[in-house]
Image (cartoon, rainbow, N blue to C red):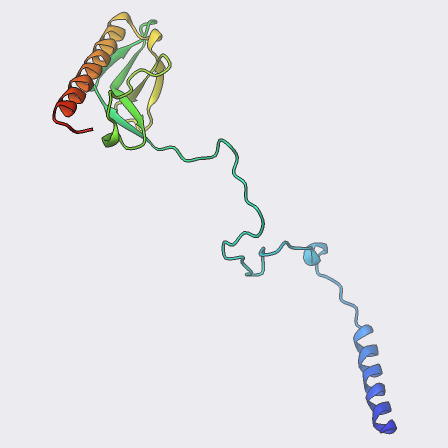
Length: 160
């Protein structure tokens, strides 16, 4: 046994000397950089997060529904500049769930959708011409009146 054990040790010594004698030189200095868990080399964490995940206080998705409440027309500001588009009412969430009046003026601003545009343009109500301000205020009054009439009808029918 002593002879067999020494043969095994000799083979291991030769193998380790052969392995230790090899020096690996990287092709570029960045070849042996450290990688985080789940990054690179086709390794993925599969969407699993270990540890506590915190969301900031302002990080939530808000859906806004826009409703055109005027036909496409020319809007004029107090300096005489014009924008062609329609006035939008907007609600957070689903517009079908709105029980009261739609929001046309919020924090002194209205939303206009330019003709052919895709994004609403916030515009200060005070910056519109007097005629356009009166038009918006009339639409807003009518909007509140219709909402009040609808609520009265639902209440008389016994629906919440």
